[in-house]
Image (cartoon, rainbow, N blue to C red; front, top):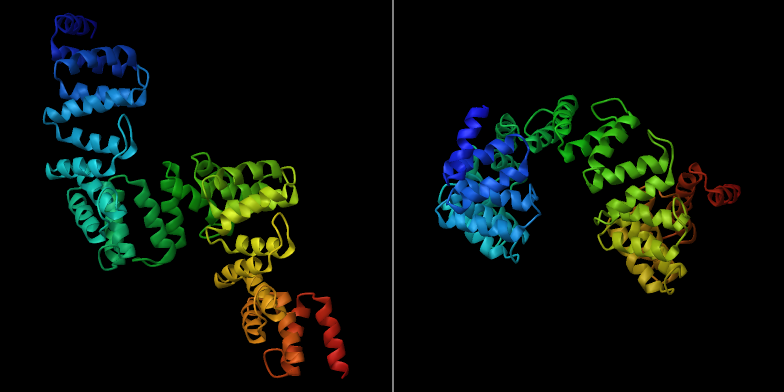
Amino acid sequence: MEEKYEEMLILAEQGDMNAQDGLGRYYESLKDYQNAIKWYRKAAEQGSIMAQIILASYCIEGKGTEKNEKEAFEWYRIAAQNGFIPALFFLGKCLVCGKGVRQDEEAAFRFFYKAAQGGYLPAIYMVGKCFLLGMGVEKNEKSAFFWYEKAANGGYAEAQQELAFCYQDGIGVEKDSGKAVEWYKKAVSQGNILAEYNLGICYLNGIGVEEDAKKAIAWFQDSAEQGEVWAQYQLSVCYFYGVGVEKDYEKTVEWSRKAAEQDFPAGQYILGICYNDGYGVEQNYEEAFRWYEKAAEQDFPNAQHSLAVLYEEGNGVERDIQKAEVWYRKAAEQDFSDAQYMLGVYYERGIAVEQDFAKAAEWYEKAAENGDAHGQNALGRCYENGLGVEQDYRKAIEWYEKAAEQDCCEAQFHLGSCYENGYGTEKDLSKAIEWYEKAAEQGDEEALEKLKTLKRE
């Protein structure tokens, strides 16, 4: 080997492009990236297309040199000018991300399309993705499906995975669960770990296959062990609820941590829950706060709400009602009903904001329409008392009923009161007693007193 190296070195120093290329590969195999890039650069400057592409990737990654995305873009451009079709694809990727050049999705799409016309499968796939997301081109789900199918039929695993998803959700094509499973399996056969996760989802929910939670777990496990973050998160949830496996909070912590450490907000949120409530770990509000905050900063509404609760209660962080309001609002604006209800409470009581009954009713209504029982009860109370809205007993009873049917104790009591007094309905003592009993069964002391009074009469 040493003799061969000496021969190659002599030729490379004499300007032989192939030898320079070979030395680059030799040093790369030794993980000596500084010497590798030195020889790749010499070969690239003489027109070696592969050296140009490798040199560009080194510049992007900072391998053997400082990161230099502008230089990387230039080498891709040179390789493209030399007729190397994949270089067009790489130029498109740089333009999408703004690496070494100003971000320009329309220009990126043109490069992807040109490479796709040259038959480059990753580019064909990217054209489909552009049509799906409306990235640099008008959104068109049918066109997305067309290009995904083209790349999938060419054997490109990522496209097979996306084509399966299109069949599963009816994106650009009529829903066909059987075909979805078929394409997921083709992608899996090529080692696509996201397809493994999605195949697990199919088995979990009986999509295109017979429902089988244990098979779902097997697919999640295999995908998760290979680093697929969605599978790691799903596995943590399955262990938390005991779906397809026995409940195991320590496993929940293990898998949610793996997802969390990949900066996956849903995994960070689950890990936060575990620390908050002591599931599988010793209760630790500081750690709960840390993980909720990471997820919240990525706009995960569940975590934003949980973070607000910690600020409100002063658990794991100094109590700060103003910050609690900020995080409740962020979650509420993402249509998270628990936070919408709490924002209503803040406006009703003048907590961290100026008291405003109209705004309170507005947020209660948003929560109520999203099915939140507390929001429905609060909105009913607003209508009963004319709080921020015009008094309307019929609307009050309508919202109380919705909340009461979800076992909201307070709403059951209010509903009993409406029937007892004929608010928004005819008086009906039997119905009043029925709802007071439901509230009393949940420990409502006032309902118990009402029942004693009514039953004496």
